[in-house]
Image 1 (tube, helix red, strand yellow):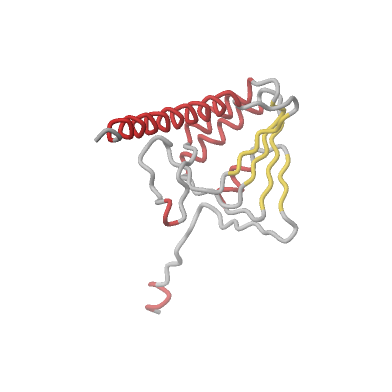
Image 2 (cartoon, rainbow, N blue to C red):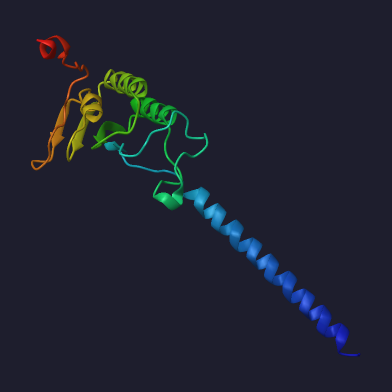
Length: 174
């Protein structure tokens, strides 16, 4: 019974010391992550890789499960627009590189994104675009760019926005 209390107190002290050490390590990791910040040099280019689905709001409920191949965090339309607006007023950013093959976005959101890019161009900065191949929506978005580059092995899939269905009733009745 004499050795019980010293052993018990030593064990409690060891657990407390280990807990305090873990807390200090986590605080150190958090402070080092906050101290890094986002730094970039002069003459930087903002690269927008728009190949995943772009929701209206990124803080909304995640539409795709991470287990099914979806990303855990995606940039929403409003966040991308704010990013473009901030890049227009940042003197370190000289232009934007759009990199997209097929953009998964509705037409109204696509037009809103195009308007943001047009406002960015009004600041006197350039926009370049690159794609391996273009779909109709990605080609429309990249039409805002000063220069469009495409992979020599790539292609452009444009069908047009109008469609007509042939009317054969009168021909078949004859």
